[in-house]
Image (cartoon, rainbow, N blue to C red; front, side):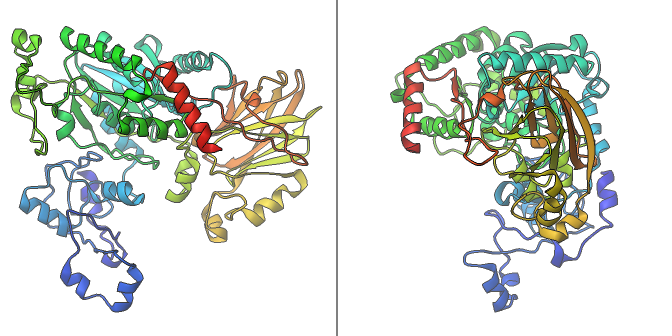
Amino acid sequence: MQALRGGAQHEGDPGSLIQFQDVDFPPDENLMAAKTKKKKKAAGKGEHKVFGTPDADEPVSDTCCSGCGAVLHCTAVQVPGYLPSEKYKALLQEGRLRGATCQRCHLLTHHQKALNLQLSRDQYRAVVRQIRPRQALVLLIVDLLDLPDSIVPDLRELVGANKHVVVLGNKIDLLPGDSPGYLRRVKRQLAQYSREAGFGGQVTDIHLISAKTGYGIESLISSLQRSWKYKGDVYLVGSANAGKSTLFNTLLESDYCKSRASDVIHKATISPWPGTTLNLLKFPIINPTPYRMFRRQERLNEASRQTESELSQDELRRLRQFSRQGYLVGRVGRTFRSDVRSRPDEVQFDPDSLAFGEHEDGETTATGPGSTPQELAYNELKDAHWLYDTPGIMKEDDILGLLNEQEVRSVVPTQAVVPRTFVLKPGMSLFVGGLARIDFLQGQKSCWFSVVASGRLPVHITSLEKADSVYEKHAGHVLLGVPMGGAERMKEFPALVPQEFRLEGRGYLEAAADIRLSSAGWVAVTAVEGDQVLLRVHGPEGAGFGLRTPPLLPHVVSLKGERIRKSAAYKLMKPPGLLDSGLSARGVERLQVKKKKKKK
């Protein structure tokens, strides 16, 4: 409401507003007829544009956006929850405002376009601070590509020191396995960082998961249902872009959510752009009664014995798609579904319902094929506990805060990271796009630099003498990739600031340290044992670059192919993946064989 009061005074020129269209709000015929033929041709075949306008006199609704949780209104363009007044009034009059998404969520979902909103870091934190007086479990989601910076440092102050915390290391699917047992090592390191952040005895469990591919999700659900059971609400908390909304959507379609609720509640908006969720989104948690736990375990046991031929085409398509995108893939299923009808001669009943009156929670209610999901009834929700998706805590120092939306999509990895290794001699420099430059100043012998970052981020090697001129000439252009936009873009991009680091080599097979590039990944440095190495790292001020010891993947240098002739680079080598709690061993082999044949 404070943002609305301030934002109503900043109404922009309607011609400068975002243009968009969607199925529920067709183009205004009068507006389209008034446009010139020249503008119609410029719009392109099949494209319709609507200019939305705000109306500061229209009262704010009491309905929240189903994508980000912001209160819906048409008062001010730059305030969260904004809808153009034309669409807002039409939906309000038709009684369809509930379940609608704001303009920002629509653009993020359908056009991959982000809007700049008037929302401060303190406002994000104020929403999360609502957890303090409540009895709740906190699921702290950590981005493994940005350790330890993605761990919220003052979590105790935000949620209270009396909360149990389960730490979830997300995006494990993107990390290559550098050695046997690497998952246990990453988990131990995550536990150490959690202790250093001051959580102490609040941490009751740690899981490595992929909210995107489903790896580790079924294990997480089983653990929560055994330990937390149905004691109170559960909150997803973490830094921006850690994957909370993706996990929210995954759990919404799992055994952790009441079966009928997933048909009624809309999914959260997800995007590589930080700060997607603006308020509290929620779904009701299923009560894990003994009967339901038994039925769930039966399903999991059956799934673990399934072969490829027993899977549906949709499931096979999903597994193959994610096996191309990530190293670790899991299967997330549902034991209780509201849309499955039994045979006419088959009687279905739930012993828990007969004993405890659990028919009120609606777990066995069928909506029927083609029926429209209705709102959840009062009896289904009166004693319910909820899982909440909270806004991402904006970090103080983050490279993503300096980038535009197109650059963010290039920097944030969305597929399995294939390490790129280069061998450098003293007096050489390595560019990671135009975001970071690493100068190898001193060392007795050559060092290996393994770049663990998005494949869309270019890497360039040059001599130390030419490094300044390379950056001056190519920053903003194709060679360095990001930032993009030429000389005009570089005028507003901060200058690179140097900082020096000293390392001691640990041998040919083990990295000495990682140079953290904030949310963009890192560069692992491997040097000869005992060699004293001096590096100078250039990065934008406020980007959050630094040194990490011990390295997260110390043996990542082993994930390289043959040396490319007359080059400092090695051929790429992608490690094999792993399927979690799904196909049998034969099914995994078939998927891998098909994958290899397709490559050939």
